[in-house]
Image (cartoon, rainbow, N blue to C red; front, side):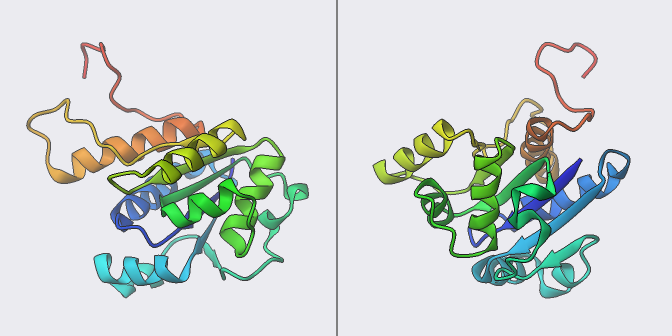
Length: 187
């Protein structure tokens, strides 16, 4: 699988960090994984997690204005793009076809090529503009996956709760992983 991860400036960098770590552990299912940060994505990551964690990521990072990145073109045949977390501004630009940076350009490519685009939104409450933008992206073939953790395990720790969102993202992306399944008595 060829993957792109976009990281924008919504709070929730911990989801992106956890996603990257799990994808690294799933390397037998990954041909290539690339990362792109928006400017605010870098700032929020550094504020929430620390710059040293961003400097030591296991995958190649492309600059937000590098339109020569392979996934900026449909000919590169990437499989999935995950924007985690996804700001409402990024969602709005994608919904309206505004490709003003590498993240929105790549998202446009994934939609036009009918490839999997997963937007992990992290805002609340939502206004009607947000909801309509989600509708537009969904109608264009994208998947809106709000970072809404489950609480099935009442004894879960914070990371276990956050992991329910990351596992959902990986399931949507097509990874074969062990994760909670409703009704599975062995869980």
